[in-house]
Image 1 (cartoon, rainbow, N blue to C red):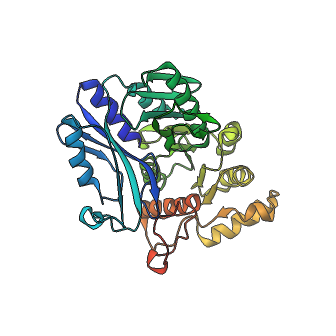
Image 2: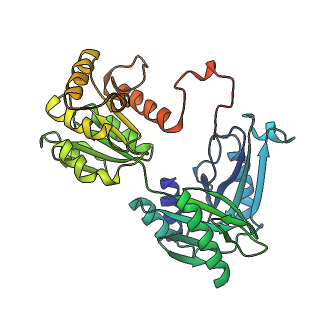
Image 3: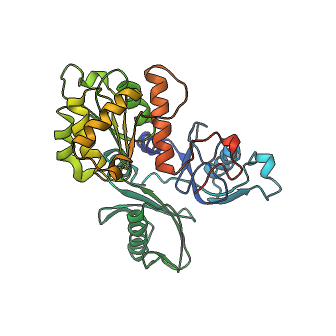
Length: 364
C-alpha cells in the first residue's frame, strides 16, 4: 500500500485528478483484505489493486464515471451475483469496494510522510465522499465538514488504528472502542500500522536479494554485520538501515522494538556472531527466527546454543536450515525460500502446495 499512498500524494501535488477504490468488506475467499486500494487517474493510469485482477476493469469503468461527475459508488461483487463471472470474480468470495474521487485538499502529504516513516496513521473517508481525515498520534488533519463529525470520526479511527483494523464504520453503532460516528454516515477507515521488521545479520551475498525482496513485501529491513567491508550501504540500496556492529550488541540495544511481526535471519556462518545473536533472538518476542547453513552446520550450532544455555522450548523456535525446501540454488532462489517460510509463519499458512488443499485459497 505504501506505493499507492505515495502515488496518490504525488498526483495531488501535480494537480492530477484521480479516484481511489478501497476494499471496505470481504466475505469468503479474497486476495486482499479491507483497506487495500487502487488508484485510477484522469489519464487512465492504474496503481494498486483491490482483487487478484478479477474486478479491476470494472472498477476502472466506474472510476471514469466518477471522474465525469458521478457520485461515489459502494459496489459489491460476489460469486453469487449474476455479473460475477462477467467481471471475472470466480474465486468464490465477495468484496465491497468504495470508489470515490480524492479531493484536492485531502491531507495526503501527511499520510504519505507518516506511512513512509512507519508512524501508525489512518485515512478516514465517508462513503458519501464528502471530506477526508488523516488521524494518528492524537491529532487529525482535514475535515469531513463538521467539527463534531470530525471528533467522532477521529475517535473511531484511533480505536481501529490501535487494533490495526481497516474497514467500514457504520454510523450510529459503537463502531470502534465505544466511539459512535455521527448519525447518517458511514466511514471507511484505512489503518497503516508500523511496518514489520526484517533483521538480517550477516551481510554476505545472500543478504542482498533477501533485502530487496523483503523491502518489496513491505518490511523495514535492517542489515547488520560486524565487518565494515560487508556492511556497506551501497551494497544494500533498498535497506532502511545498514549497520556496522556486532549483531548481538545491536540486537540487545534494540530489543524493545522487536515484536511478533519481526523476522530475524542469521546468515553470518560465523559462530562468533551467530550464536550470541541467536541466543538473544530465541528469547525475544520475534515471530520468526531462522539461521542459514548446512545440516552439519545446524547440528554444530545447536550444540553451541545448548552450551550457551538455550532451553528446549527456545530451541524449538529456531528455523534451521532456514527456508522452505523449494529445491532452489543461489542467493535469489534462497531469498524466495526464506521469505516464503516467513510469510507462512506470519500468516499461518501450511507451506503445502495449494493443490493438496480443499478449502478457500485466501483465509482471513
